[in-house]
Image (cartoon, rainbow, N blue to C red; front, side, top):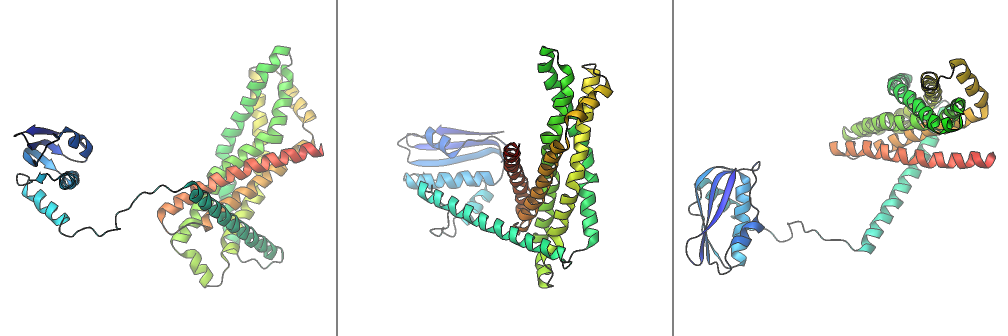
Amino acid sequence: MVNVQPILKEKNHCILEISGNFLMAESRPTLAELSQSFPRDLKRLSFDAEKMSAWDSTLLTLLMGLQDYAKEQNIAFDISHMPEGVQRLLDLARAIPERPGTRREVQKASFNERTGKATLEIWKESIEMLSFVGETTQSFGRLLRGKARFRKSDLLIHMEACGPGSLGIITVISLLVGAILAFVGAVQLSMFGAEVFVANLVGLGMVMEMGALMTGIILAGRTGAAFAAQLGSMQVNEEIDALKTMGIPPVDNLVLPRMLALILLSPLLIIYANTLGMVGGALVGTLYLEIPLQVFFTRTFEYVTPWLMAQGMIKGCSFGLLVAFSGCLRGMQCGRSASEVGNAATRAVVTSLLLIVIADALWTFLFIMIG
């Protein structure tokens, strides 16, 4: 612990007595606090450090601030009683005067300036996104013509990571979501003695909305972020530049297999999520509402039509495409530092979730219009 005590030796002479450990980890007074404790007619400021046992660069920072304050207030500044090491380091810090303009000055931008920068940033993001859409579209066109260049083993590796690697968390989430839907429905339907309709509610909620939506969110947080981090690391290590130098299109070799893997496996993951959600609802219906298991599934499959299942599948497949697109886009936009890789992963998740919500709203509106 550090203690800094101002002592008024004479009428215009103040001594700062420092005792204890003046270290970064210890609580210590600030320059503003010390300056407020000085008398108004102060003419001389000195120090007493005999009781100070340890110090680090925080002491030098405080002394430099006090020295500047003393210069502004025409106060004599005396550090002759400070440790010799402190005096040498302070003299060394003041040996070369600070060049004007080197200190960072924080200036608050005007409203018009902030609006202009935001508009330019949105315009730049839109151009980059449209450009990436064009590149991926051309890559898929080359794939259909059999001219896309990527290793088939990469596609299998990404399919394994997107599919079997996601089953564990999808299992837990889907079971719990189905159970939650059943509980929420049971609370309301039990008021009318219509608990058996919980089966209809769970089936409708899972196949139309929750199965696809939860799968998309899981893929955004798990797979989309992984895609962005992988491609971002390749940007940092200049591996993508090496591919361009060798004449290999990075979109074909890196982006295309990742997008294909997620597009091909999204329908299977959605079917798996829907099934587990219904199982979770059936467990609640059987154990809590005492609905026979056969009756629960019979009502579920009578109510869930192929068109309702198709709506969920269409939504889920579009979510998988958007997650893969967002992850690869942010990965290819990554900068050249380690912090940029983390930013790319974060932006990939945010972009994926935003696009999923927008796509979900658009698909729901479209299906309502179709009827």
